[in-house]
Image (cartoon, rainbow, N blue to C red; front, side, top):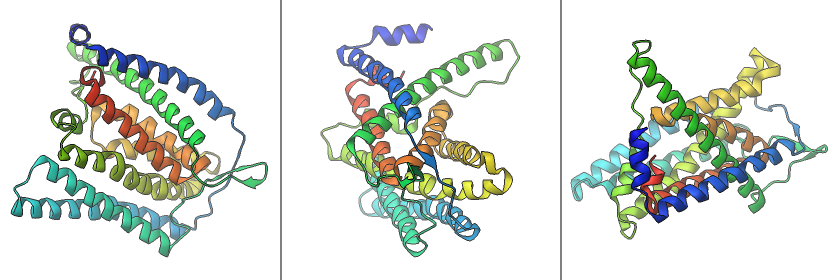
Length: 304
């Protein structure tokens, strides 16, 4: 509580603006979630074969873990050899890895079109859901994500505080550190007017949304849903949504962001079903760009 009070004391005008704008957006997101819930639609059963589902799982794992990691390592080594490895080179290497992994998944999807789910899986009044990305859909999803993220961040603060109190009384193990994601420190230390910040924007606001949506919502989610049908046909979608959200959260390896990322990853599965994969990518990119913007403009408020 004392640390929180000290943080508020250090707030400047932009920090208070950040709090105000995000609170307004979160309240608007409550109505967006109500609109989302009341939207008409009929859920379509999965059309993947077991073979396509297995291929999707393998492709996602290989692209996300192997292709991305290998290209990042090779690019970083090349930059280190010729220029000396700097922070900007790390983000450039990360972006190259993201592009390579995305191309691998998109290429595999071209060879096996049913494996990579681009289109929506919800039908309206017996007709296929209108394809394509639109601004109203993007705004609706973005507001929903802000509200879910805000609610889950508050939930984590409550869990962490309770955990610490139990640990002080010897009733639980030590709570994990309540620290922001590693990238936050890099963003805060980089001048927004430098080309180095441009490499962060490429990796965070473009490369990561495309690669992660292809891997988690394009390949992993429909594949998990197909296999979950054999376990529980009535709860297959719920199982796939929760497992995909958990996998997305764990992939980021940030304990303090576990709950927000779980909610983000799970909700984006529903977005994929209703509006398709391109809307997922656009909403993910907007969400990351929004956070980058406030990190630079209001660092004290953004890192609470």
